[in-house]
Amino acid sequence: MEANDLKSMDVEELWKLHEEITAQLGTRIVAEKAKLEERLRALQSQGHRMRRPYPRVLPKYQNPKNPAETWSGRGMRPRWLSAQMRAGKKLNNFLITSSERRHRTG
Image 1: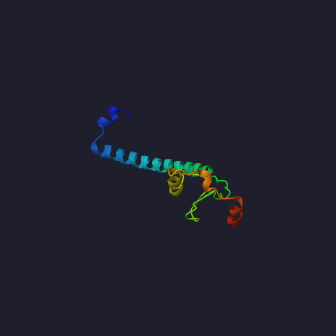
Image 2: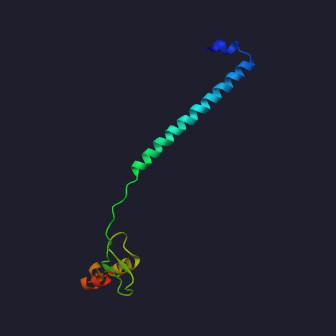
Image 3: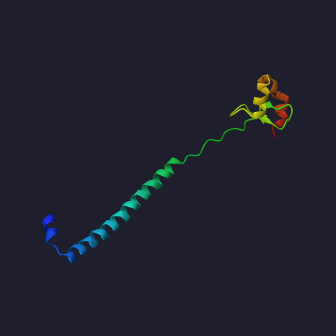
């Protein structure tokens, strides 16, 4: 359809053409949306992998003032340990002995 054809059409014919185009676009949009959602579902099912289980990490360091406060040596240093180190103590002062570790498992 050329521009001249559109210029020669009256308002009713143009409106009818508009409605036909709108209906056709609506049908195609719905079909395209269904295709995209199916592709998204396929991609999501591929992307979800289970993380491998990590073993439990036992604490390596213990606060002598409060034995319930421990740290495994991973992650950020706890406040109680940072304060003790600022006071001049060494990290080895807070190590949990191997006999104490055996009693903690369980």
